[in-house]
Length: 380
Image (cartoon, rainbow, N blue to C red; front, side):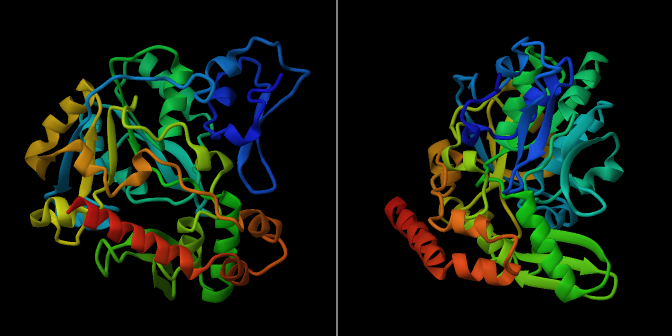
């Protein structure tokens, strides 16, 4: 038995891996570096749980009326360290004050991206900021369930498919579970990320200490990619950085990202966070180029959390449809780059810089910019 007959629809959420009672499922990387479930037929007892918890096979539909806010943290230090407005930190702190647990994506010692949990404010920094790599969920769904069964508050954060994977895995509602997803462009391959790290290490030398995908030294809209070493650093505008170029030109994303089932207006998460792109048109008074969050409240639980932090944020309620106009990834999947197959076919035999330069172009960037301009003109 296969979990999914069509591999390209698998989002890699790990729900099947976490639910298997016989540990018959392992998550193995394919040639592109993405993890997929592989079933050991000797261990499998044909219980069917893997299919029952698959969020792709059991895509949950919800009816709600999302409420949208433009917001940012009053604490300028936290805001600067955050990708956009620093709202996640406040939500997480609220749960921690209830003796809760926070799950999110973090770097390990080798700067691979994986999901883990924390139980104190001092560690919140590891979850702050974007990580443009698919995070490995591991057994965090099972760990989240253990905390919930022990009557602990849990905030689980991740991509929409990861949050739906958790909810599908749990198969019941928990009063103390809160979930927060993002408006996701798509998840790049961990293998591409590994190749890029190797490329940077060869050029930059030194021992890598810290990575930021969204350094705001030049402002929120012209953010930089920043690699900090013990003796030097690499910093470059996101439009010029090779890895971000591959990411934004949709050449390194997971197969399922090109036809994502989880991009929708009505979500099962309690809160959806994103950059408020287009804020200069919707609420120019909240556009200071330091980072403004789009906060979408999807449930009563989400509303309760936002009410708790309102005294710590600058915010304005906005029309939901207006808010997502410049955030098309809320509801639409990106198109697959025509050179994607060639890109992955050559990833092991070309230097990273030559690979990206050969199979990406400036045309997509120009097309993206023109599309944004057209949307703004249409809105006006």
